[in-house]
Amino acid sequence: MVEPPSTPTSSPPCCWRRSWWASLYPTSNHHPHRRWIPSATTFFSTNNTVLTALFLAFFFTVFYWQKEATAGGLAIFRRPFPSRQVPKLRHAAFNLTDFGGVGDGVTLNTAAFERAVVAISKLGNKGGGQLNVPPGNWLTAPFNLTSHMTLFLAEGAVILGIDDEKYWTLMPPLPSYGYGREHPGPRYGSLIHGQHLKDVVITGHNGTIDGQGQTWWTKYRQKLLNHTRGPLVQIMWSRDIVISNITLRNSPFWTLHPYDCKNVTIKNLTILAPVFQAPNTDGIDPDSCEDMVIEDCYISVGDDGVAIKSGWDQYGISYGRPSRNILIRNLVVRSNVSAGISIGSEMSGGVSNITVENVHIWNSRRAVRIKTAPGRGGYVRDITYRNLTFENCRVGIVIKTDYNEHPDGGFDPNAFPILKDISYTSIHGEGVRVPVRIQGSSEIPVMNVTFRDMSVGVTNRKKHIFQCAYVQGSVMGTVYPAPCENLDLYDEMGNLVRRSSSQNSSDIDYDF
Image (cartoon, rainbow, N blue to C red):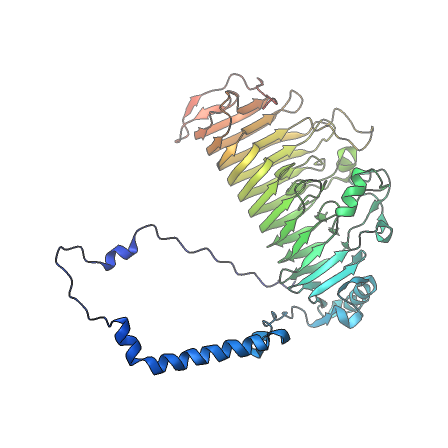
């Protein structure tokens, strides 16, 4: 598989806090030696000719530059900045214009994309091919990718999804959902789609894929759609996938949806949607996926920033594909209406071995959340949260076990999920109303939860801001605010300080 070019990053220079200029001046009481400095009169009298020549040269330069301004200025100013060279990542490379593409934002380019994909599909035995999308606005209906393909979006390239649903293909419901997520029956496919693929790269010089979701969001709110909206990018039943160095924005529904995929790398993405009035525009939704890395992304959307899923109720239990071995790191996320990083609520196939680290979540309703309900079945286990920062979040850490949304009445109400082995280490922040709200139940207790090194500044000084119900676990060392009484307390050395005697007690308070 061909790796895309990495995007260099740099850190801002450190700011000097000391008065460095003070060292330039002597600190003794003796006067420094006096230096001769010419007066203005002397300077002008001895340099009159030189100054006159410089002034005339400057005057005529400005005069001619202004004279040429109507034609775009002097030639030296009219030269365009050099465009970034598009790297050749495959043995064969094509330009979308080779297949009749027109980047005027009006011409429909679906046929051009399809012809390009067909050409690349014939090169699988030779390493595949690369399709370069040059600068411009490339309007298109949904199209499919092929194996051994690199889709490269140049700087200034924008793939625009047509916002008329009659151009969007209808597909069967996902087998682990048994239901179009919003309506029964078929669902709309994604703008960029792929099934049963291997070795696919979507990358570029930060080009953009724009789903133009505004029309979809309005029709959804007005109940004018008869089928579930489609994602922006959806790759299904595939492996060896790399998506990097592009911007995804304004998806009609979930933005990036890898479904039942293996060996997936997602990095250096910017994912954007309005934080209000853009329903269900999750950023990245790994669904029944394994062996995945999500890193170095900025996400600001109208629902969960990242939501790990694995199927819905009896359909997910039957499909039986867990999400596992997923590393999420170095993200900045905002979600005004939902959560920065979520697991569930569709997690019936199971979710395990997940690490979330070095993540900054700001201006969000919730920071990190696990959500499930009776009827889901499955499990959430071996989850590690490490080095998280919360800034202006209503609730920091959430585990919710009564998220009662079901595909139909056929679910088993006694299919209780298992939640266990969840750790939170180095959790810091400020401006958080409720730092922790873990709401287990008698049917779905939360087992073996660990907190270590936590300090979150709160906006509300009420007593019960570390809220628990039906939780078993421990607190190691210093944790602020004071933890709930459901948890055992240990000192920094691991010595037991206090054993909890009230694991099943509840102090959940939704009034604040």
